[in-house]
Length: 239
Image 1 (cartoon, rainbow, N blue to C red):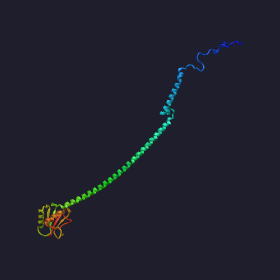
Image 2: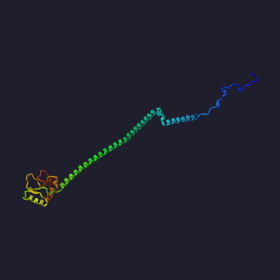
Image 3: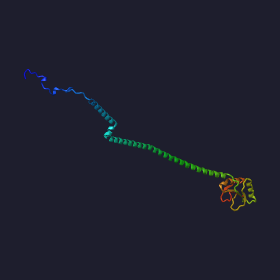
Image 4: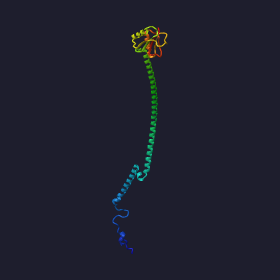
């Protein structure tokens, strides 16, 4: 090659590098598709959704259920709840026992009061019975006293003539008949055992008033209670 030869572009044979691509090459990239441009946003959205779901599951306890870790916690919580309920029941039972204790004391006090009342009522009943007995005895005594103080002019009265004066007993009988006596009889002595003075005998305490009234009607001062008489009142005329 002479010094006059000139190396120009056209002096070389054309090869691959003489035909570059029509578009930019090297660091220059072509336009990306819509999917390629949207992919980062989709990834961020998915990550955000997963993170939100994880936070929600942790807060609501769903994460423990999904992973199977909630069974023990639930059982523990249930056991704790049962223990708490048992404690409450025991406390309630103790409270009931405490409540029952004052009730028992109140029942014992009421029973003691009832026994005291029963004893008091028994004493009052005994006193009442004794009072009634005394009242009955007093009434009987009063009845006997009333009977002894009452004159019964229907009582049988026998006038015995021990004076030896003829018709003397009949005279005294007439006096008693006039005084209102309705069962007077005149008689002679049937025994040799006679008093030494005129006397009016009566057998029962209930005949005392009648005997005294007979003695007063006949003017006799001696009135005696005796036994073995055939009639309630006997007048023995001696002088």
